[in-house]
Image (cartoon, rainbow, N blue to C red; front, side, top):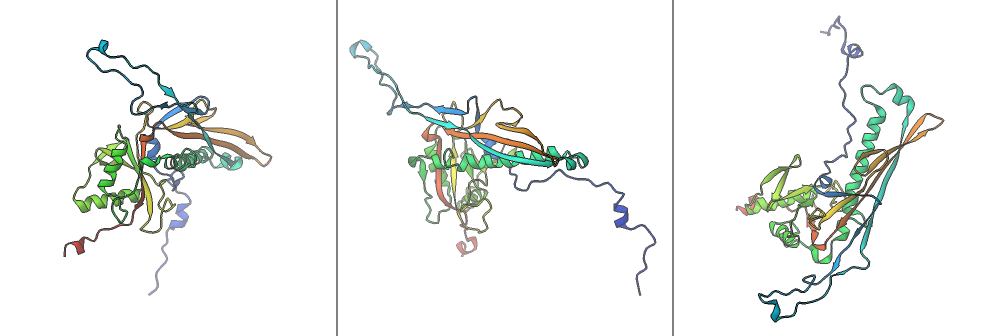
Length: 319
């Protein structure tokens, strides 16, 4: 028995008259960029930030502590400054965006093509900014942790344990702000907590839900690479976990950006129109100026060579 063709309008033809709900362009590589949300930022007028430090021992200046100062001489002296303090210069992340004006003229409803292109370019530069704050060879956090603030996992497997994070807290004990780790490293830490029967609590902070250890949030970022990759293909791999104190008044880590930029679209980011060429191609320069500064050595510590692929065999442990 053969099917009879329906004597009615088909779906393919009807679709030509239908309206279609559309989304804005979805950029799959976009992340929440929690690092920028948790880190304090300072705007610069000149693009240079000088960190003046005091040359000191255990105390900056000898003092007298006595109920009767007349029976002892009051110490004299002064507080020495570094004569060559470190200066942080803003780095520039830029791209040139081209848009065909014929396309933007004809196909800009319901979404403006130029606006959407610029929005995606801004997202891309801000993703790169987060990576540079962590990995830049000059000012990146990983490159600027002092040797005394670097530790290795205590467990032979390299898995991150509660003991390791406690050791980081002992390194950054003056008002620590947040841990920073790849999602796989956080998952590895949670497995160790589960194995030990100490599941950590969670809290809602800055619009997200975060795991807390000793009250300090574990902030995820894929810019702390696993074996050099944001998205590792193997279940195992090595990475790092940072503990950060942020804030200028706390002598912590701060992000830096340029203020007063013409065409400013976001913090330290500007979009400038470069003109239209003979082929009708409109060009835009998208630039972001950023850096980071560590105001004191004990504002930052790192747990190095963390293994993310260690799994506990619960079935075997129960036999």
